[in-house]
Length: 140
Image (cartoon, rainbow, N blue to C red):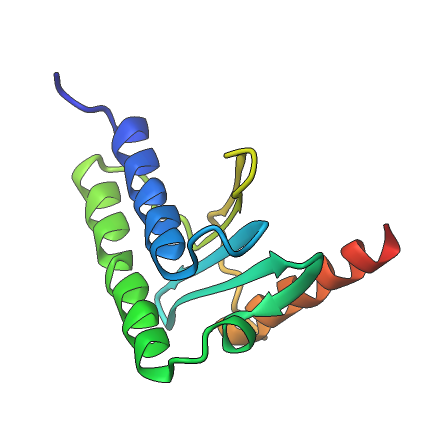
């Protein structure tokens, strides 16, 4: 059966979730996956909800070499998304924010197609998302 773009794109997103679960296992409640795919910036990073707190990977992964390999794999896989979009002649998103609920298997994704990192770096955008999730969690 021939895959359409949506199936192939969802499969790539599932690969990111699998990569995260391989690193983190079931030790976390939620996984937040960030991708920046802009001309001047490519970034892959992750943070998690664990023990009802929002934590960065530095707080949950003590093996620095493993963490660096994980981040490199995720960053390298951005090329798969770019290639897929080019193959199907569709716009490549400039940003993907994916949230995976480990307990329920629920998945939410938000895509941007306009530049996000015009006056701010992708790292700063990522940290703003971390801060926002922390604020929302503490408000509940």
